[in-house]
Image 1: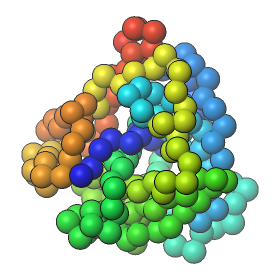
Image 2 (image 1 turned 180 degrees about the horizontal axis):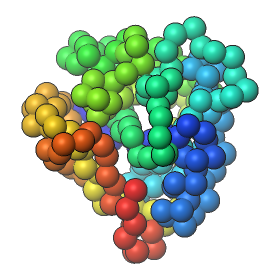
Image 3 (image 1 turned 180 degrees about the vertical axis):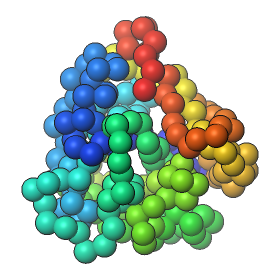
Image 4 (image 1 turned 120 degrees about the vertical axis):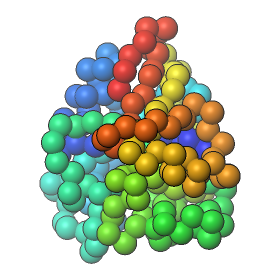
Length: 204
């Protein structure tokens, strides 16, 4: 079963991605860290219910990774924007048997956090990047969505837009348990999040 874990704002630089989040929500993001395996770095912001927002970009201080970066970051261009959604699964191998287009299993860690991620060989998720990335957190410590609580930020809805949104929804429907996620047919692929901060509606 796929459950919404977090959403990601991508940028050509981390500063640009962080600015988009902080400008939209009026709250500072927290230090995340680096991902040596894919040469990226991030910052985070907790969000109810047990979710979080990630700002992520290529790390200019990191050596090039051995293969394409996750989230299609090697080819990301233009303004920083909400561009990816990530779903957690209890068993990544089982999820990949059901949805092999999600990619290959890659084991990752940062500090005390350990997780496995499905990453396509070319770094590009299907449906122009609108297919969810799949993650399985290992149980050593609480993942960010559970540890970063207390921020007055609440996700109200996440809309996945794509010219073939109906096909994407049909593909995911047997596996997806994410009532805040909706699908909308649109000319251009993209994501839109409706978020409240202290009961004030913000759009990301």
